[in-house]
Amino acid sequence: MSENIVYVGSKPVMTYVTAILSSFKDSPEVVVKARGRAISTAVDAAEVTRTRFMTDLKPSVIIGTEKLPGTEGGTRNVSFIEINLKKSPEAKTPGA
Amino acid sequence: MSENIVYVGSKPVMTYVTAILSSFKDSPEVVVKARGRAISTAVDAAEVTRTRFMTDLKPSVIIGTEKLPGTEGGTRNVSFIEINLKKSPEAKTPGA
Image (cartoon, rainbow over all chains, first blue to last red; front, side):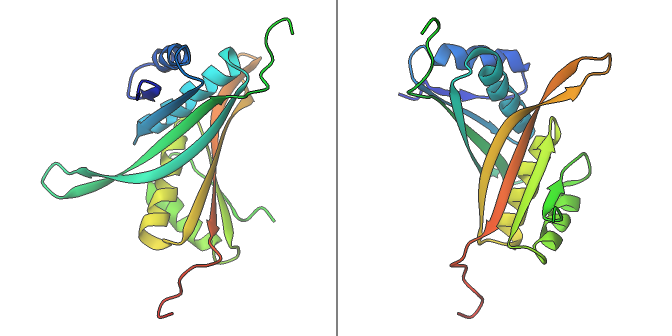
């Protein structure tokens, strides 16, 4: 049930755009998640998907802070983003 | 009237945290804006402000794409983020 989540890391943006597009085959809603430096790439991937491929998507965005284990014990705080992309119900179908 | 906008670039995160905190002296609401690679820094700055300094802030986030003039004429698309930080009205005051 978690197949509609795309985790964004340090690969090229188009890698994640492809993953997002293919997740939409199974679901009307895809969540794009990233932490730290990858946050910019996640926004790029969501925006490229939305502006070039699926113009009916509505993004809604959450940001927050996660505690990860630090390298020398203890924890460190890392920012994250979750971009929820949803097909709008009144989407125009080609030729309609 | 635009003094409650903090533009985030490539300086250290704490530079922008300081700018955000000082903008809150004049306004109950501050918007943190960034484009491209600086988006991650903007999220970090908003999250550090919220988790370490002003725990009553509610963030709401918008992402989008802006057309900027390209280096060889034409335009290029750049992602942006706008993080709206708002003091919640039911904020706990110390000692209350």
